[in-house]
Length: 572
Image (cartoon, rainbow, N blue to C red; front, top):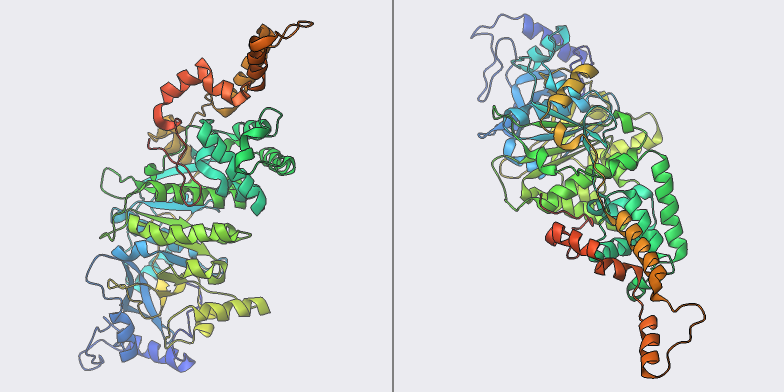
């Protein structure tokens, strides 16, 4: 992003030409005197910078916020970078969500780093998904060099190297970071269906299985618990359990079991289990008042995009379920950057997309801002895109007919502006973007081509040994590092099956060759046999189960309440 040798956005204005470049060079060479400096009624350039034109003044005034704001960079106009026209985003508008888009290599990751640093400095916690493994540098001070100095000078940035307080996480402990796990129960049937790639009918059947397990207190901690419940519900003893609510076909159960087996064969088991990650950890502020930057390290699961994108949605759904309504705050409680977000929407059902839209729409009032990060706006469904008030659009390519179609579609998503956006978006250099955000009054700001500031932290990964040391020294390491396998649905169903077998061997059935008793007593015996309880009924009535239910109290004594995503949370 700090590549000062990147081409200037020469078309970032009505028309740029060699003459304008020569004019700029001439003005730079002119001594700065009262006689030679142009007069303007608004902000003026310092030193050799020319005065701002009326069009530039109109754009600049749209970003002159009186309250706290994040500094993005300086305006590009007519081929020049104008440091007097600073482009900013109000801190209080970060919970109105946003989009960071652009082709590969245009500087999206560095934009995330720049925004995350300033949020942390303002006391706002940040969540970053590190897909490529190069965001960990936000914890270490940056390294000054010629490119950084040049960029800082161009945008009038007082660049000072700084690291920021970080916690590093890894899904299931795969990679460098504190393990992030979820129980199958809390992950819920909707998200799990997407991970398992189930169709709508299979998703509905999985929902019935979860409903049954919730009612009976059969907690699904890991994948073997879910497999045990599915197997039981298709057994001779368990078939009747779901008859009243639709039943579970053997074919559908077979698909679910095969999907679980394939899922585990890909090494997915570590992601489900305990101790379950408490998403309140993401809301922490460091002792010095800066917001903690939570970095989810994902390079180890780059080949499992469906999994990590769905896990990110689980984190959001979990926050949505637990956080209270707070309305509009002076600054957000958390800003969540959802990288590679197109993976979330690919092959998603209508119900799944509706749930995402509802979550994005409502989580704003809980103080959480979401930024989706992807290549083009068309990767995000229109209903979700309509909820994103802040836009940072990096360069797009137009090499193919599909690229050109995406470019035209992107231009249509921006407000009217004096820029030729089709030309601008293909001419932007690395670390340059077209910006429009929401003002403090909630109105869109003018479209502004922008040369972005340089991050002050390290623009690259920290050494793996340093990263591991930071993880081991974290107070969260002792809480989440070691996996725990407590008694849950699998163990309960096995114990119930063993108890049922022991009861039969103890003489609950008539002895061989014995005649059933005649008369009233015989009738009662036959009736008792006909009403012999199912295996689950035996589990629910067993001393072991009652003891466990007492120890867990109300946590499993009633059906679990689920959110729009089918996720289930219990206060920790």
